[in-house]
Length: 383
Ligand code: SF4
Image (tube, rainbow, N blue to C red; front, top):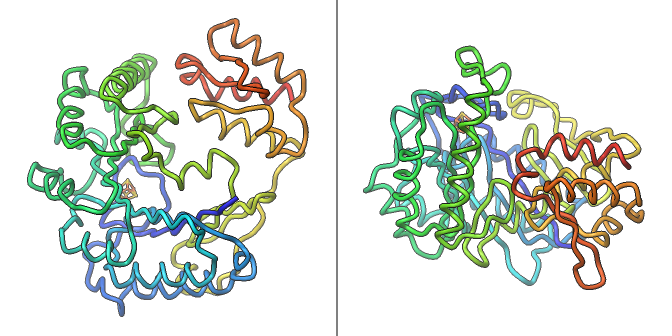
């Protein structure tokens, strides 16, 4: 199975109030050139990629994903250097590379797109989050609101797959408001759209001023259901809890996380999975930059963890899992107790159990998807 590569870029101009990702604010940016902070960071990334080549030189990869943080802070020449380092540490698969980069609207410029396209990037995820200034203030989203000029320039850029990230269920967002925002985005027919319900994470500035209530969570669910209906009505496949695509434009990279495929993460906080064991990169951005850097450490798991994780990740896909995929991922046949629990959930309208050729398929219904955490825990208890 081909592997994927994740490159973490842990810098942002400033921190958004709801953000719990590993990133540090760097505004005002004095020097974003190859000799400055980002250049130093790219040197460290290249050193890490090189030092782990023994793990990866026999692996074929078909995806690279630049996530963050804000990868669009990197100038194209630095992106090019990282891609070259990855290409020499792995074997690119004959099918070619899907190379994705997240971009914040304030960094977008046609010259930047041309530059990263020249480096090989062929998929760009625009972090729109919301087009409504009031809602952006409610959640404390920093940066530029994408205006019509910016959106038109982004969607006019050729030779890339256009992806959009949105946040829904922001307090104050109405059915009409969501329809208006979605209508503006869908007018451009992005090939891919990810939508995440606003989460109030502990320790964030947002958590100090907003305590979720059952009413808020009910409204969030309503907005998300409206979004699913609108996306499906517009011809998009809802292929994963938070992801929608036109046919053939699913994220090949993110599918690796949901199908137990191997991936290798570089940069502080990045995770890796070699097909058997998980690792992660400990330490802060400062430690990563100034060293000494110790390399990835094992992510300890309990006896049932591979099966737990297979359920947790695979059931995020709307198509769910199969008995044969369970066997391939965990090395054991699916226990009868687990299949029986799926049957019980199916009787309650929360799951679907169906034949798929010679195989059996298990997936959540839309209702089940909204209770996923509890249901996966219930299934895992039957392992
Ligand atoms: S731009 Fe993204 S990663 Fe950066 S602070 Fe905001 S939410 Fe976090």
